[in-house]
Image 1: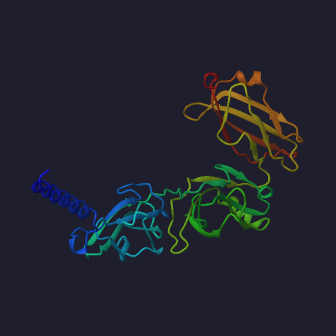
Image 2: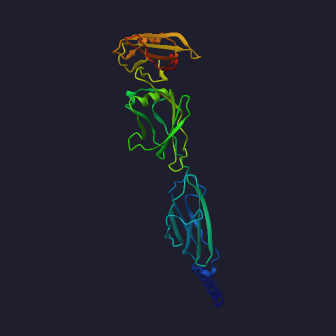
Image 3: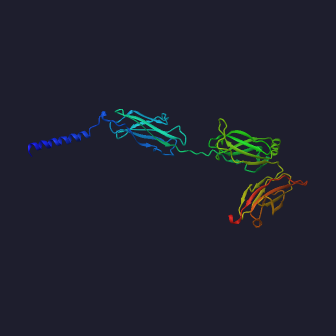
Length: 359
């Protein structure tokens, strides 16, 4: 190889070597014109169904001059996070992770995370992303438990108390009991009560009464409709609405209280009703009567009746007798008789006998 060619080769190799070295040399701050950027935001942008206390995390990265840690800031919906963010360097050395735990927001809210930062050449980044917290749906309604709808209550059964009970609300503690007697305006009673840790989550409200006078007042009110609703502790606004209307009636001790079957019970074919009632003092017997109703609610000719001796307060209808009658709505009652020829007051309950094909 002649001398000019050799020199030319040396020059080309030198140029290649310089180019190679320059490509791997660190870029000076003066050469960096691009700001940092975000990588792998958590929760995912535009996602929904996130927990109220979810982790918020993102990496702030700059590939050229690097991120200045002291300039990294996070805001959540325009304010600093309640939980102080933690900033840690990435293992790659290209930037930092910043993360915190979300706190202080409600279900269904849209959250905007804003990150600002600068690189070492004072290029400013201002980026954000949004996500939504899951909508937490709580059933604020409660369920009335006692007395059952259309209940007849007597003094002995209530044990000298007027008692109501219902399930505890999602926000327990304050309730409004609404009472509407026949022919009287409705009234309400605000009650501060909880379940006291009982395993059934049941709130019980007891109103002590005296033996005779108060009970006669309750009886004179006739049918009493009642509802209950949770209320806010401050202001007393009803939360979630009242329970459905249920009715009850207080009776004197000379009414045979019907026990089974319950009012509006469903009786299946092949299972005749077993009826029972509460005994009446000084009664010398009971008349049991059960009548099928037509579509207009009138009595039909399907009648089951029997006279029961005074020491018996139950009756089992035989399957053959029961199957000989038509399906439909039935009403039944028990009337006590007394030695002086008097009859007691009475109450009426209903049940439905199903057709054989519906079993």
